[in-house]
Structure formats: C-alpha cells, structure tokens
Length: 181
Ligand SMILES: Cc1cc2nc3c(=O)[nH]c(=O)nc-3n(C[C@H](O)[C@H](O)[C@H](O)COP(=O)(O)O)c2cc1C
Image (cartoon, rainbow, N blue to C red):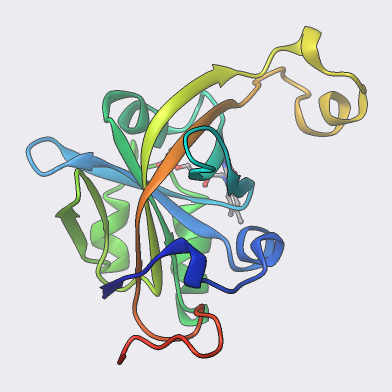
C-alpha cells in the first residue's frame, strides 16, 4: 500500500459509500479492535486549510462505537467486491457475540495510530475532531425519523480529519497519476 495525496484521487463518493460500502475499524494492539460495515458517510472538506474530512454515523447499539469512542483515530477501508460476503457478515453480526475478524480471515494492521486491514484496496486514516448525537429536536423534516428511527436510536456523527490515504493500486487515482511514478 502506498500513501497518496487526496488531490490525486478520483472516485464517486456516493457509490463508494452507498454501493461498495466501507469497513469502519478502531482499536489498538494492546486491547484489540472491532470492525463493522458502513454505507452512510460523507467525504469532503472542513476547517483548517480545507482539510480532507470524513463524516460517519454510528448507532448507539454498535460494539464498534465503544472502540471509536475510546480511540483518537479510526479507519475506513474500501474492500474489493470479492469481500462482499465478509462485509455483509461484518455488518450483520456483532463483535460482542463473535470474533468477527478472525472468522473473516482479514488481517488487522496496527499502524498510523489506528488499525486497518491488509486486504483493503484503499484506507482513510481519520483523527476524530468532533462527535455529536443526532437530536430529534434538530430534524427539520419528519421523514428520516419515521423511516430510520422507529425506536429513536439516533446515530452519533463523528467528523474525522483524514490524515493519511493508502491505496493498493491505481484504481482510485486521477488519470496521469500512478503509484509506479
Ligand atoms: C451495508 C451495511 C451498511 C451499514 N451501515 C451502517 C452505518 O452507516 N452506521 C451504523 O451504525 N450501522 C451500519 N450498519 C450496521 C452495522 O454494520 C451492524 O449493526 C454491525 O453488525 C455492527 O457490528 P458491531 O456490533 O460489531 O459493531 C450497516 C450494515 C450493513 C450491512
């Protein structure tokens, strides 16, 4: 995996989250880690010098939330299509009940103040900057509440500054940019 500048990336952020999904992972080598599949999130610029930023949304019931809350950083891994079955499993079963990572055979790499998977195609290493629970009173339309929160288990949103981006090959790079250069 090679580190790349966010300015050299080319992909569709809507389909990257919504169709390809990502693995959200946090933890440390001493106490371990947990991962879950996410498809809700945003990539963009915020604060600093138009800092590259990721926003993720975690429901209170997720075991991964404890790890994200306890760590300064989290990672977002984009996986190859061939891992769809594993991603469905990681997004259905809780790490509270099973050793999910061992069952999938994915390889955690503890580095860059966080943990990600050796098998990832692209990794965003994010440092938490802001976290807030979505509040019922702040919704301006009722539809998301009715559709997504029948038991009022509102997500916590986390804004992470993207500190490092690793890619395996040229797939997500702008034309004319190559890892081999
Ligand atoms: C495609 C897909 C997308 C998901 N997106 C999210 C998400 O954005 N936020 C969230 O809180 N849960 C999301 N989930 C649910 C969690 O991945 C799921 O509850 C997981 O089992 C939690 O694992 P954990 O308890 O080990 O953290 C998604 C699940 C799937 C299958």
